[in-house]
Length: 280
Image (cartoon, rainbow, N blue to C red):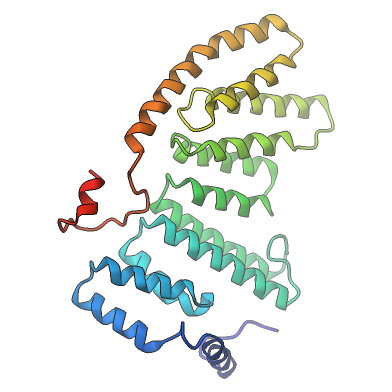
């Protein structure tokens, strides 16, 4: 069936049906009470948290206005962007299945438009939260469903440029390596291209202070050891060993500084709360 206009009787009936399925969650009185509190105090974090929890319990099309309001006030709330995008992707996939389309790879007008909408929201989220590893992981997973190889290389490189220095970015680096390893190669040229990219990623990874760095070094050693030129192998490992050792020491120092900091704390004016002092 064609998409419904929000103002159509069928769309209104569908919304009523969703309300009927979620009578406790979709409480206009509850939403109105929270919005009244926020009108009096726009920085009432408890009210915002309650509104987000309320939205999380709803189908996406009913929750979207509350997510939009939350993110307009807290555009750097990466955790809310993640939930918003997860629900948006699920809604688009469900809509595609209903019309027998293919959200991930379909060439139909509606499938292409749905992907563009999701990509646009990812773009907004990453503009405000460029160092959020989880958002980049979601964006890469989304892109892998329909983008070409070299386009994905560009996406992985962009992700590492923005978020690759985070001590929790090891999952990004691992995903990049495993994806390149999975390439089907059919010629020596393609094999050399894959090997060059792997070497570049490994050499950047082993000098990056992050979790699981020892495993990256072992993987890099194993990768280079498959090379034919043993003198080159020894030279490359000797060149990168001191950088790896320095990165490992820096990781431990950064981890000590980061421990205890709430990475999901909302950006809001200070009010003298005890938890605020813990973040300083």
